[in-house]
Image (cartoon, rainbow, N blue to C red):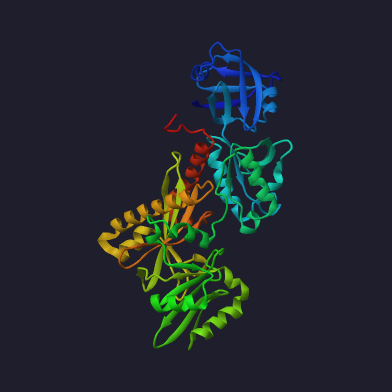
Length: 456
């Protein structure tokens, strides 16, 4: 395989002709060839080759070629030569959904998708789409591309070489159209990464028997009996009781047992924090049953950890992990989250505040802070590799909520397959936010084979 970056231009001539600059002709080893087989996505066309005397690496496509394989725009892209077939691309699809609103077609994710498309335009053909935009009979997508001025325009293109899944909710992902979409992409061997949201109990189950990482996971049990909750409270003094498929800290309880004072439940209600005291364990369980009923069967109980604190408020860390262009896990961004006073979690929406890891760890560990941070990064990479090893689908991005206790031990509380991006709003983490986007694009290049692999 050979891979070359070139500038694609459009010619008004109607013939099925590809005009190739002399420099590009040499790079592609096309000298002396009269015909070329050119591909974009799954569309292929046969065209005549003509050389042009122009410095640099340039490709001019006659309108017959452009329309034949649905090339969406001019600009810089890769051309990949394998077995004498020349493929333009990659053609990257970002799958999402949202209200049918022309200015914000992907709801709250629109700005992030625009950022992806803006950066991606420099090296590939990248578009966003919803499940409704696919025509399976014709194997085409009516995608949203980004113009120079930052507005969306639509183009019909072949099915993409790789799909990055940014569907907004568990409900969307478990719908029959999405299940069918994944099956159809799988049959066509189109890589689809970040398959679905993680379920907390599934992740704990994946890791509990893995001796390389289970020491980092607090004791956790799915759908525990009242007896199990009581027994764990007596051993650990405090626990977190949380919905397996939840997010943003919704529905989470911090349960505490103090032998001479009774049982306590702390939780979020509306915009405030609630703390209730119970004289008996059974009265606390009756409150939980009254609030949630049958839905408690999808709750997980998790050992509480005494985290390091700043100003008597616990802190934990969001590690934003990515696969890079060589298919290795790397830590791209870290945000330290300090809990709001009286809050069950460190979520920013619940009164938490964001710090850089250096700010938080220097206050907690002083001169040892850099060593503690490097150890936490190693643990995060080990955890990502373990989840990928046990997970049956492609992963390219994971968000970890990690804690560090007073003995410097690292703990994993949650793993998210669709991590939020709020940490990148911190002024000191803007460059990491840009690096996150670049890693997504590099991994798309890798999965679509538009990145040289070590074995090739």
